[in-house]
Length: 208
Picture 1 (tube, rainbow, N blue to C red):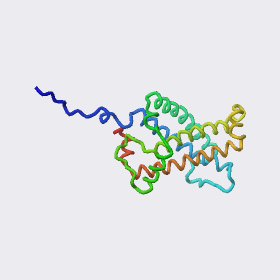
Picture 2 (picture 1 turned 90 degrees about the vertical axis):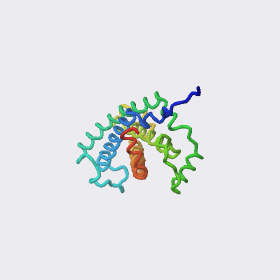
Picture 3 (picture 1 turned 120 degrees about the vertical axis):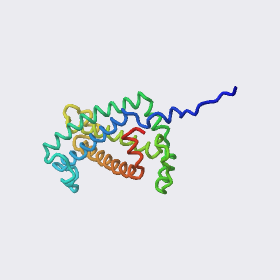
Picture 4 (picture 1 turned 90 degrees about the horizontal axis):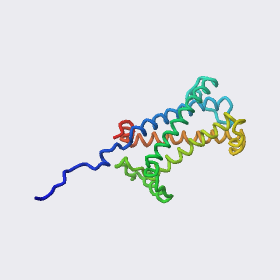
């Protein structure tokens, strides 16, 4: 009697593309980062690092300096604790290594050229292309720089070594502003990519 194998779907296809813990921490990180960015712009306007740059009040959060600081610090705690959970679960599950590595400059250049020419495939949302890998790693490092430079500004006396590593109090403000600009650029590009591949938004909401 000839044995037959039932047509079972591979376990990889049954598993969600994004597990629940990833989706929850992703959206919490997104909310915290946006609140910090918009409230941070209001704080920046109160004492701008660059005198020729003024953020329009209509796109800031808090209404006034005191209100912006309250929003900023509340979102900071959410970002820090949720970010720790996000990184810990990514590392413990092995997802960080499998999703973001290997990564090489040649692969980034290849996929970047393919993206510019409209030839970058998005058929399998389980796999990140090299440009996505680099962008996500950059924003993780950028958020870390934001938190550390923010501490150097907020608790300058308590963290003198951190302050000096940033080049002093005034330089820490410059670092913080530049890191915020990098995050804002990432958000713009990220939203544009989601608009081009709407399935990625559905996947981050439903997991599948």
